[in-house]
Length: 252
Image 1: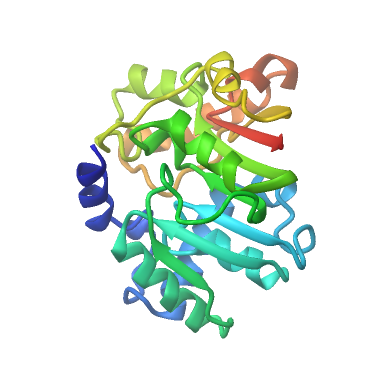
Image 2: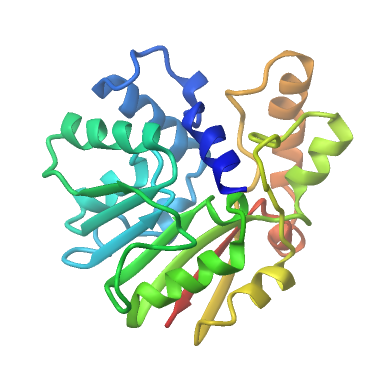
């Protein structure tokens, strides 16, 4: 399935519809960063890109166009990025150049067979990647292998038992990249079982409704004006397990 996954992501740039700027320009990368962290406002709260990784070696598996990796680098981390997509790697290089950052190790590679020795990195990060790979458990094992003893791994997968998965079925609106080869959703229990190579695991459900710039028409209007406010008015304890993103913080 790896060739199919590679072909799929070579022809797609995540969130491309959120910018009118020419692909590869500074404005293009800044627009996509702005959109990503508006939608995922929880992420810098849980992952302190600016201050939490200075001087550490960080590997991002599935680094895409380098949006998160640039944030790690600006915070002083020594970063490495791998992705199956050559398109993504080429754009990630332009992203680093556009932000005046020192060239880093960016290469096409399979997260299920990482081209690095054991015990290489302080941190391994894979946000929104595990669910799209052909063998998620193998990617987890590889992340564990290249992580130094005591190092931290940070993963995110999509929650099958979530508000967004349920809403997509009720409203008959497809999920982003629902057509991606190999896409899987996980329950919290399934996710935890997959993370057993790690000595410590904390799973934090996140990604609750925020107003969407992506969806238009009456469904988008109903979502933004009614659903978002009503859902977020519910007690946190009720909705916490239903977060669309399951963040995992693991220690080797």
